[in-house]
Length: 172
Length: 172
DNA sequence: CTGAATGTTTAGTAAGTACTAAACAAAGTA
DNA sequence: TACTTTGTTTAGTACTTACTAAACATTCAG
Image (cartoon, rainbow over all chains, first blue to last red; front, top):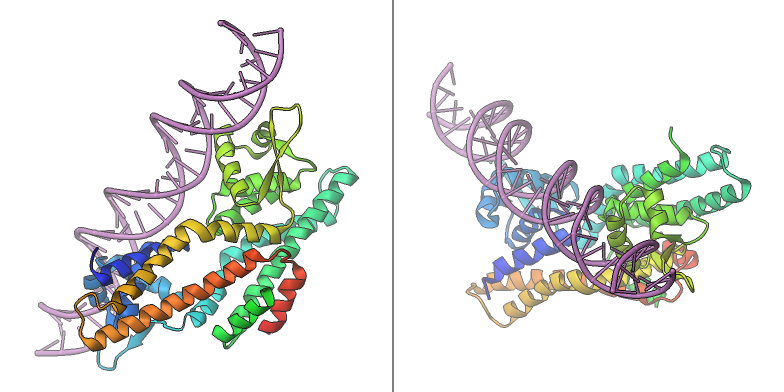
């Protein structure tokens, strides 16, 4: 059984890669999350075991996702970072981040398929075209719903335990 | 502008890897989703461009996640597969699948950290221990809430558009 | 302007992942 | 039993990714 902090950091690294993020992000977040104050890049190097380069890159990603926040101290040229402790706020930020870009582009291809089918493109017998059109539309509707859900969540200005518990009641 | 079906298959491959799944899974699902009837492994080889081995492996994963379903025809030794067209049912299955295993194990490390801190393990000054304990507990509460959410969803026997739209109303 | 402190970018590398090709296993058929 | 059909496993490979080490850029101090 190792050092408590180290174990915690390794644990968050694991969670990080479970969510499909580089495990370095988990480690950096863990260090910041346990720190009593914002840390500089050098302090992160010391406490996370990663190198400057890796930290520089991962810190950028974490900031973009809203999981950590840069802090500037007057008269100090260093960058400091602190962890976001309001996870619901972080979730909203992440949803906003993921929504744009890759996701939209991928989902768009389904929309295109549907559009082309409805425009009569391609060489299909009427029954097959009907099937394909129906399936494409069902998939598009599903994605549109997911999109609406993500968008609704990220537009919330207070997503907290109360909101989640309300939702939980409905689901039960 | 290519063949409609091929474009659709490529599109789903992209979505697949966006969700962190092998893109072969997306391709196989796409082929099955557009097929009027269940397909055999050989037919999948022909229509997806993958080899038997890859299909064998990915089909297992897709089945485990509930995204496709094996079909057995009497007097036919072949295995056939058809796509799940009820995506909400698939979501429930996926949540169930992901919940057990990797996720629990990772989250468990946070629980362990908290337990050890509360048991007085480690060499920390009182104020630091207080901070660490508070942070660990907040994180654990957050994960527990997520867990409850996932669990509630996967226990639903009818998660459909109506349910989702009800939730959407609350969020707004 | 020179030098030091800080952060970023780049080239190379190590590890993981998902595929192919082919050997193998299993199970029915002659 | 030997042969055929079907699916799985394995060995090897190509690709991707996230890291390190080091060069580079920028900004401030003297």
